[in-house]
Length: 439
Image: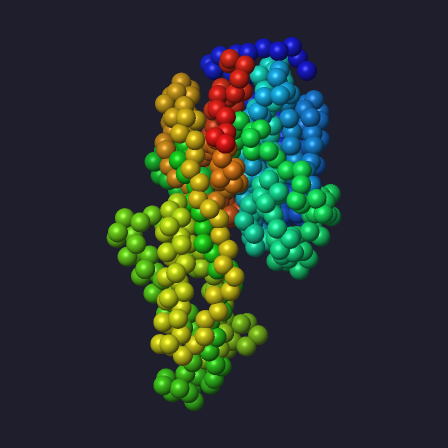
């Protein structure tokens, strides 16, 4: 490693943007499915992406290791290796037919910052680690934050037994195939008390920054979720012409009544000032039995509630149950809500958010605004372990979870430089990290 040096904020070494361009191109080649990007959790695409970053980190002279769940850690050793580590990173998996930047931009940014430090001969006061986190996208397995939960040994045997949507094989099987060791799930995880802070860069997944002409968002908090992934409304299949309304048990009408009433509850909560979203991302009849001349006997749908208010999430769980029972009585159908899953809301560290908004971004002439995150992120898991956390959003046209993600590279470069300055601030200056966990 180069000789130690400490630089003030304004002289923080810039990121290696040529490396960033190269990594984005390589990631696209790995994940392109003919229409968008598919890097399935614990699948070939995610595995190849992790190998790409591990090899790149080794070429930079960084320390590289994996944990029992095959999470990847790329570390620049600090001057004091006993000090709590400063961490950054994100995930490398994608939803089916997604985009190239969701998650991956955060890992590319972190490694680009460290590459710039290597090039400048800078060595931080404490270890700085870029983490490539496994399986953040719960589109593949019905468990939130798999990789970050695994890092803190929070996955249960039941979690490891869930199956992937496309293969029908368990999480444990896929993890082992990726080089992990599921038998070690209860030991050897990260120690929250040894992590000074965690900072994640991520594309914004909505339109706020684009619409306001702002380059970056500084996240104030991350929503938690309440999910029913497999709701079944069951009635009776019958002839569409021969069955009068009074004798029908129409699953479609039952599903419509359920979603309409829940949407009305959402409007009521909004009128009271409550912050939440409600989405029915799946709504379908059985393709093997549904027909234009048949009354549907089965409808499958999903319910996704998001909020930064944990009490509101609990209340919505109760209201969903109440509405389901009322619709059953009204429409003569049965409603099986299925398993309830979800995640816990999280607040970001006020000190780092203030530094980003009031000091670091203005010093760069970079437009920034405080905003909540409606989507879930691994940062929330770190925050709920008592670790000071921060999150930087990069504006991105066309949202995310689709092939049309459109982050401009200049915006990414500016946000990555901002990330580098915050990492430098947390891991440098006076030789000590600027924040420590509140344990």
